Amino acid sequence: MTTLDAPRSPQRRTRGRTNTELYAWLFMRISGILLVVLVLGHLFIMNILDGGVQRINFGFVAGRWASPFWQVWDLLMLWLAMVHGTNGLRTVINDYTRRDATRMWLKMALYTASALVIALGTLVIFTFDPTIS
Amino acid sequence: MSTGTTSRAGAPGRLAGTLYRGREGMWSWVMHRITGVLTFFFLFAHVLDTALVRVSPQSYDSVIATYKNPLVNLLELGLVGAVLFHALNGLRIIAVDFWKRGPRLQRQLLWAIVAVWVVVMVPGAFFMLKHSVEQVFGS
Image (cartoon, rainbow over all chains, first blue to last red; front, top):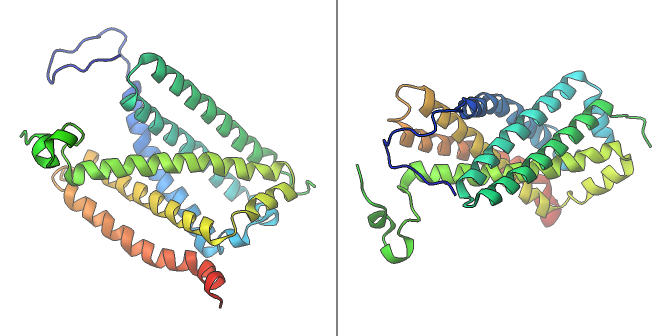
């Protein structure tokens, strides 16, 4: 279990320190700005401009992914949102777990599930076949 | 400045230590977490259901058909509201982190994004729920 130092106490663990958390922090902001455009655009187009789920079926998806523009849009959105969300949940797990073992297992489950979903989504976008039956 | 959590919480016995500092700063953080986690879990389901287009048009269409009812429509509206809050508050966090005057204006920034949220959600809810309302109450 990790213990918190009193504020302004001298820093421990000077060896082996990396900037991983800084890059994670920066990534959340950069991907966040991109996701504002990608996700809010996606929600607005799908739920309002295109008439919502009532209009969705296989043919709708086929028509959309016929265009490389929407393929790239969806692929970018998938990757950014998944990594952004995975890092967010990593923070939540770090905040609330008390035992090292619990924290480790929850994070392994998170990373495994995320990797599978990213791989599946990517595969589907790249191998989509509109003539499948 | 140490204002103590007990005085804010009001009931020292029960809530002592469960509130951080309260007010806009803490509650926006709480909402950011809740909306973020909810959206992330939805994303898993959304990638999985869309992946059915790789199985067959029939399996995709049959799962999508289970979404075409007023209850799921209401859940969709909730999702849009959660994502919109998360997006706007994310921009507020970026402003607090990178804009010189951001930290001092964090409270006003929150009320500004809440106002934007309401202004977007009112017409948004109208257009998103239109079909369901017509379905339930007859058109």
